[in-house]
Length: 220
Image (cartoon, rainbow, N blue to C red; front, side, top):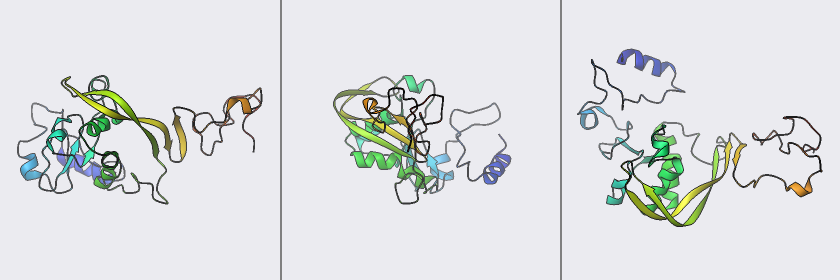
């Protein structure tokens, strides 16, 4: 990798490029992660992930390894490291990673903050990660489920938990893109017998009126 050209491209596209991932990459002529990266080269505000080593103002991000949290070393932010191996192993998805911190004693508020506002602040995109007036309406409506659950780490060891998060509804830029139990939908027996798409395209990105054909779409 050419550091100069990489930095030039990052500066040219500041709205898109927020950093450069160095883990998992190496070549015969370069090493992706140097031994003194954390202790000397990273600056306050830089993000160090995959490892529980936050210090010197460097932001401490957790992806999959959740065990250290039980020892009192908590992350500044929570993310997934999603790929085809981790999605079928201990990581699974974002909510499952968040669930692990609930199992280790973090409150729901603490977990949500580390998965939303803290990351947005870290990457200097503070229009995201909050529900303030004027912010982008990217919203996940979550339900806390109570019961007996289990969570595994990247090596397959299990930790028991008594609560987990489930996504009921997701909005992207103010439009519904996921609705687990149809809480935004009209009851079927209150619609015309030959109904088709029922949603308003202003908020519905799943089945808005006008997609497909047939009568009975939502009319106002």
